[in-house]
Amino acid sequence: MDILEQGIGELFTDPDPDKARLHFRHKSRKLENKLMPLKEAIDKYVKDGEYLAIGGFGANRAPIAACHEIVRQGRKNMGFAGHTSTHDFQILAAGEVFNRCDAAYIIGLEARGLSNVARRYMQSGKVQVTEWSNYSLAARLKAAAMGVPFVPTRNLMGTDTFKYSGCKVVECPFTGKKIVLQPALYPDISIIHVHEADIYGNCRIKGIMIADDDLARASKKLIITCERLIPNEEIRRDPTATKIPYWLVDAVCEVPFGAYPGNMAYEYFSDEQHLKEWMQTEEDPERFKAFMQKYIYGCKDHYDYIELNGGIHKIIELRLKEHMLHKEVTNG
Amino acid sequence: MADYNTMELMITVASRELEDGATAGVGTGAPCAAAMLAQKTHAPNLVIMFEAGGVSPILPEMPISVGDSRTFNKAIMATSMAEIMETCCRGFVDYTFLGGAQIDMFGNLNSTKIGGDHQKPKVRLPGSGGANDFGSFCWKMMVMTVQDARRFVENIDFITTPGWIKGGNSRYDAGLPLGTGPYKIITNMAVMDFEPESKRMRVISINPGYTFKDVQENCGFELLQIPKIKETKAPTHHELSILREQVDPYRYIIGR
Image 1 (cartoon, rainbow over the protein chains, first blue to last red):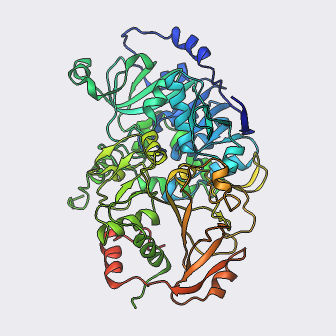
Image 2: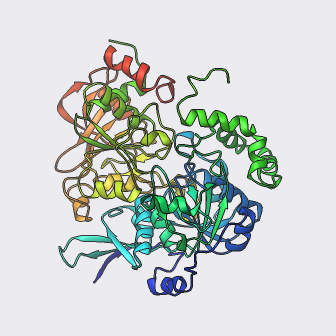
Image 3: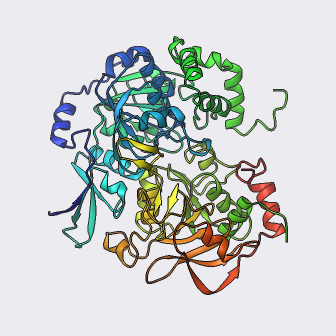
């Protein structure tokens, strides 16, 4: 196949499926207890210099507790998949965790506005960037999940997004049309927050999947944080509900409210008040330094952080909001 | 004529473009408000899709994120981003609304960076998100934005999302699917489409209270115009009351 055009963006991961196969060949297939504290899972599986991907959609079902722990433990020089990345990006940029980034959606928090700290970091020249779109990163994960070096798509053509991507355009051998090849993305380590998991790592996710089915399958190592543990018998009672099978998983951490201050569908809505406070504080570097000290470095774990933001009372409020009951319940 | 603000006008004009039974890929904010307004006025069977996986939800209120719980509230399906984008790629999605920091005369959009070089930009913006994908695959891409010469520029800093690229047939020559492309640009001052041959932006109607001169003065490139420019139909009392009372009662969007 002749290459008609190619992007100049660097690939931060190797798309070779045979190298990934060698890794997966040695990954345990044993049904063994993988339960451990989050702190231990991050310490054991997230390493400086590795390529990191985060599940969910920015501030929705994102493993925020794990993002805090990565910053607390001071990880550096990582690669990062900026795929539908909002509050997670904001946290990891504040900790200057990564120095290379596949950018599809970064810096922004959608309708909430843009993160000053993340923007300053991306404008500092400290981060090497390759451009993609949300679908192209999802397609790259799909290629990895398929165990192939690329998948063909029809986006990016004619744009600077393509020019600064790591894609190639070829002529389709069947139709003669131009087609974009999206190179497989095999993250070294990914973290996904799910509703329910058993101690082996079989997971249930409710609501939208975003790209987490493929992300789990593409990742060389995978940490699961879950709202709650459930017995393996419960998994076996309804196998249609299993979205991630245990052999993909390296660690299972029970972290209720692990997506706070983001939204966990059917559990709790996002804490818009705290996210707003975060964004406003970012405007002043000194105040933000104190903010980070208080909310991340000074916290032992995620529960310290939630306590600082209103604890169980706040969670109840967000649960009512998630279930649209907040307008009916007035005794507050 | 009822009193209304700029945002209410743009949302109303955009909503009228969406016909009953069509499909639309939308983001949060004004596009979502336009789709909700269409559903509650003339297009009850409009199918709204969100890139994160929500399909045909009954939106109880304005979502904050295209992945928050509201985007799949009482939906017919909660699926994946790949499925949504592949649905667009297969030709099932009629409309999308996009925005950006810059737009040029061919409807190309920039939401990536302004100034500096790529690795050290003067201003870094979020990037494509799902915009390049929606803009590449949906049949009719529309833009809602404020008419401003810093936004409507002669030379765009970065093409994040494809419009008509360099005009003429360049969009299809680049390899994008036939029949797709920018359709209408809705601003606070006018509604524009694209001249069929050159694919250059042209004014087709002017909003109440403005003239073609106003639009041109707030645009960084020369606008074409159709021979008989009409006045854009102002929002009706009915549209405004639904928008204010049912679509955006907390004025998240229309209060901006």
